[in-house]
Image (tube, rainbow, N blue to C red; front, top):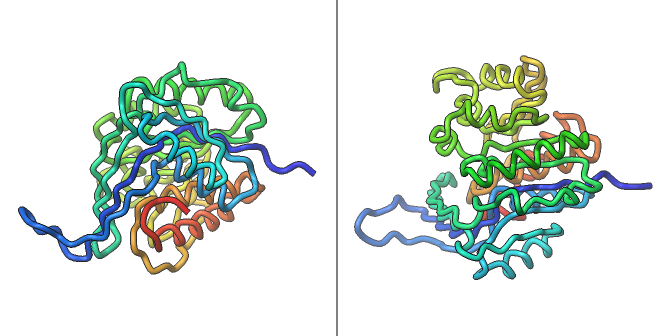
Length: 299
């Protein structure tokens, strides 16, 4: 008996510098912190969680700098992912500094580096051979060359009848790009996986508007919308209405970095194995609950 088709993730690989500081940052002096340098990136994290929680083959296309290409490749292989890493000749691997406070919430300082320099020349149609699902990291849509690649990959998947999902990735970058430009670029996707802030932005609603309304509105544009809500779990919307609410798994949170990526990986792995949206969201919540108990965004 054959297993599910492969999952292809096109996204970002970055080096995470995670600084967990129990006390508030002290301006102009030292703040004690636990600091770790770890492999990360929204696309890579999701791929690793999918490989950990599911049985499908997981592939990843991303761009890295020469200085850390071998380290990142080894970390991905060890996690069960089949990476295709394009080595950039000009820029180093992207770096994200994650400042994590006592409440486990994080603030990011982001240098995209090589990650958003993915371009159409990096795309190979054979990446979709045997694939049942394509997942695109939303970060790809925030730079011209990587956005062009993402659109090419999306169209190639649609031509083959392969399902496509997108995680919008960053409310701040979404606001800078423009929500409508993002929606135009992802037209035709089957699954959208925003968090609450991203959902409200994409739906064109004010902060005071409820996330339920935002999810419902977005599901008029995308067949399946799954809004992650942190400790409140997830909302599932289809055809203009909420069809399920899934509770979060209890967890003692240390670092919320990558929790959304873990949800995405767990969700997609479960969908490939035949779970309905609610069952897949529960799998995503289990992965996210595990992710927040450790530093960084990987299993």
